[in-house]
Length: 359
Image 1 (cartoon, one colour):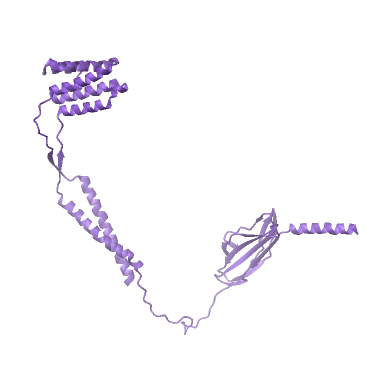
Image 2 (image 1 turned 180 degrees about the vertical axis):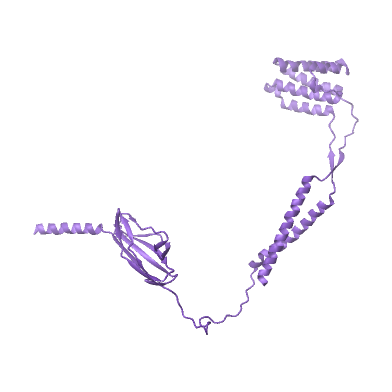
């Protein structure tokens, strides 16, 4: 008795395992008969264990010759039997444009490299031949009265916009045409500010050098270069010779011919110190740098031209007459051409729209 119970139990286990591992493929169609151009849906369902993977058939654009596939829906997966089994559904939408009885072969699904096939289907496609009475052609559809189309503002937005733009475009076009036709020269008035006297310009530069205090940063060469350049520029403006292109000794000799020796003595010391710093890497003392700055200021004050009191130079106004350049004429011509094309396009658009509405 125990032996029979063991065999029955073993058989049940094996049977349950076989059932659990079975794969079923089923195909159904929602309509066996359709008219030309109508649609039918083929549903392909696969039941398999949850740990398996199914590969559905891939079609290009036809199921069989004469039956076209319109759409393939996304596969839908449902878990059953406590998530041990899966039910996967794939839906295909088909149509046909030739009347015939079509045989739809079994659809093949691959599960673990093994093919499973559904049952075959059939689809009957009918032509839509509806008999008409030639003596009564309006038996299905009665005569229709002429309907007046309703007024819709959206249909007129383009015409209104183009109409509004026509006015500024036309005014601008007229302005450009007048500009290119008159061909008058361009007259401009420019105010020229008076140039500072040489001593004022030199003192302004020296104040800048004094405020930066580059000699306190160990930049003695830069300090003496800027200071002597300011003095050379002053000498050129005050005495009329190009001191910027002359050596220090040449400047001193030229000044001795024009000024007294007392005014130039301190300037000679300044130039000598500057030459030593720039060419012999001389390191002057702090009080020496301050003394040379004072010597430069004293030289300017002793040699500057005497100005009239309370007299400030006024800016002069210069009138400049310029002929219109070729570039300006070209730009005016391009602007006229673009505006003309825009006006013609806008008028054409308005005319076509009005014709379509009232024709």
